[in-house]
Image 1 (cartoon, one colour):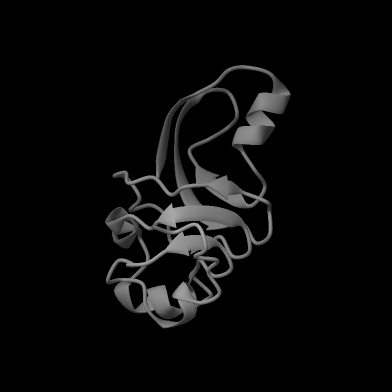
Image 2 (cartoon, helix red, strand yellow):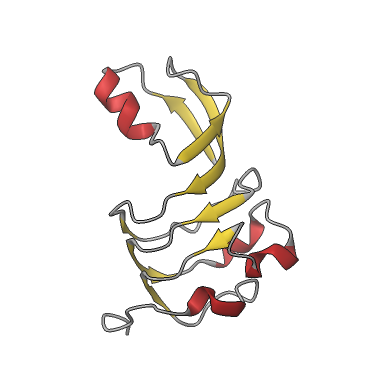
Length: 122
């Protein structure tokens, strides 16, 4: 994932953007371009939806277990830099214990669809 034109604002705003469970390359906190390389954010209280976006090829680990992420999982998630066989490995991909709705993209197999609170799904 790529974030363009990082802010040159307050330290607090930069720290919010550069959360400790997200690893970046090309980011020094002084503005510029950066690539997300790893999201390893277990039980961080994150809420919201997953965006259907391009530019996810740099992400080699995506673990958001036990948060409040809800809605559909976009097909674009299959374009991450996670090799196809590693979507079933909890070492590189884990979306369990959220509020994600079926039908899941074909790259997501195994237990990743387990323990989803689907009570708000259509």
